[in-house]
Amino acid sequence: GVASAMCFGGVLVIGRAATDRDGPDAVFFSSSLIVAVATLPPALFFWEIPVAAAFWGLLALVVAGSAMRSYADIRAYAIGDAGFLAPFNYLRLITVGVAGYVMFDETIDGATGVGGAIIIAATLYIAIRESQLRREARARAAAGAVAQTPRAGPKAEPPAGPVTGPGSGPPQAP
Image (cartoon, rainbow, N blue to C red):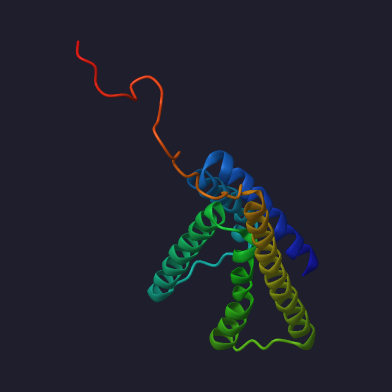
């Protein structure tokens, strides 16, 4: 749990830096390749080729959906604030829990429920606190900008009486 969260946080930091340097397409391709290479050996050891044609369709749907979600995550973190986006990633915890219950009749044990509640509460706290800090920083910046703006004094009145100087008299004949 904690190690997984730390790894996820590390991936976000590294992914953001790599996206800034190499672009989201390169990060998507390289991360997909790394995951494929890393998971292939255990998959080959445990893999059983499915017989049902419907399973292949579901598998293709899962692969396509996972690829789209991964690409969307990479694009979102490339242009968005991680403090804002991170709480949405934790919706996966809830979604996977519900999917596990509906599809496989899995139930969540007490420790998993408590751990999930702690993760969700901590994430919500961080998101709310970061939002408050950003608002305060914007307010301070706006207050500083107002304080630095030179104040305009009273408008200068045009001088009273005749103006003297070159070109101020009646036109001269050539």
